[in-house]
Image (tube, rainbow, N blue to C red; front, side, top):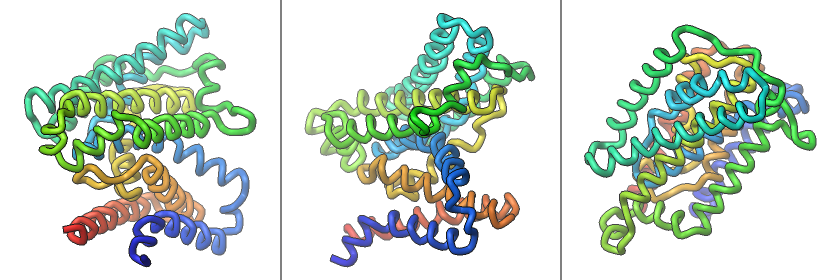
Amino acid sequence: MNRAFLDRFSRILALVLIVVLLAATKPNFLGVRNLLNILNQASLNVIVAVGMTFTMLIAGIDLSVGSILALTSVMAARFFQTGGVSDMIAGFAVALGLGTFLGVLNGAAIVHLRVPAFLVTFGMMQAARGFAYLFNSGVIYNNFDGKFLFLGKGDVLGVPTPVAIAALVLGLFGLILAKTTMGRRVYMVGANYSSARYSGISIGRTTIFAYALSGLLAALAGLVYISRLNAAEAIIGEHFNLMAIAAAAIGGVSFNGGSGSVFGTVLGALILTIIMNGMNLHGIPTQYQNLATGAAIILAVLLDRRAMRAEV
C-alpha cells in the first residue's frame, strides 16, 4: 500500500516539498508576479511535452520538436506583421499545417522505412533547423501586429493566454488518452507491440498520429513563443526537445512506452520550471541550472528502470 501510494503521488509530493522549501528560503517566491511567471514559463514546455508524451508512450521519441518549432515560426512570421485577418489565418495555417506535415514525415519514415525513431527525428532535427536558417537568411522578424501578440502576452479573464492555451491542450489530449479508442491504442502499442499488432491495431496509423501530434504542438508552441518574444529567428527553440523529454520523464512517462500520462508530464514541467525559478531567485549561475536539469533527467531514468525491474 505504501509503495503504491508513493508511486502514484511521488511527483505531487516532490512538487509540494520543492514549493515549501523555496517559500521558506525566498518569501517572494509565492508572490503573484513570480507564480504567474512560473506558469508562463512552464506553459510552453507543457504544450511541446504533451506531444512528446504521445511519442514516448508508443516507445518512441521526438528529437525534432525544437527545430520544427523554429522552422514553422520563421515561415509563418511575416504573415503576422501586416495585421490583416486573412494574413493572420494564413500564418496559423502555414505553421500548424507544416508542423503536422513534418510530424507525419517522421512517423511515416519510422513505420515504412523501419528506421529507429531516434535516428529519424535526429535527421529531421538537423534538416528542419537547416531549412530554418536557409529560409530566415539571418533576418529577425519582429514588430508583429497587436492581435497576434495577444497569443503570447495577453490574458483571458486574468489568466495569461499561454497558460490558457496550455490548459486547453492538457485537457483535450488528456481526454483523448484516457477516454478514446486512439488513446487506448497508443498505450497498447507502447506496452506490447506484438499483442497490439495481433489484436488488429494499426501500428502504422497510431505511430503516425503520435508524431503528427508532436509536430502540430511544436508548431503551436512556436507561435506562442514568437508572440511572447515579438520576434522570430532560426535559432529559437534549440533546447525545447530536451526540456520536453525531461518533463515527460520526470512526470513518469516510461522510455519503454505504455506507461504515463499527460497530467504527469505537466507535473514534470512544473517541477523543472520551479527548480529553475528557485535557482534564479537564489542567484545560482545558469551552468548549475543545466546541471540540475540533467540530474533530474538521470534520476527519472533510474526510477523508470527500477520500476521496470519491480514489475518483472
